[in-house]
Length: 69
Image (cartoon, rainbow, N blue to C red; front, top):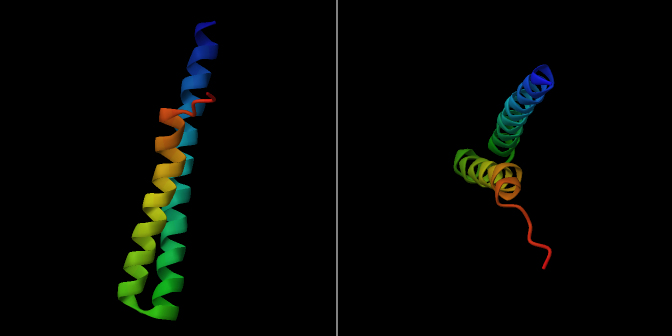
């Protein structure tokens, strides 16, 4: 039983690391495409918005949970 808890903890950590790296990838792509199409200032604003939205939806909402009342 102790080993199964260890596997769950490792899987959780790997999931968080994978999600974080995925968010970095999305932010990089948003910045690259926005900078090419619309300029540096718009790229910075679009990237910040994408990172904030992703962090809010991927990390904050699961921690808070949803009330079904």
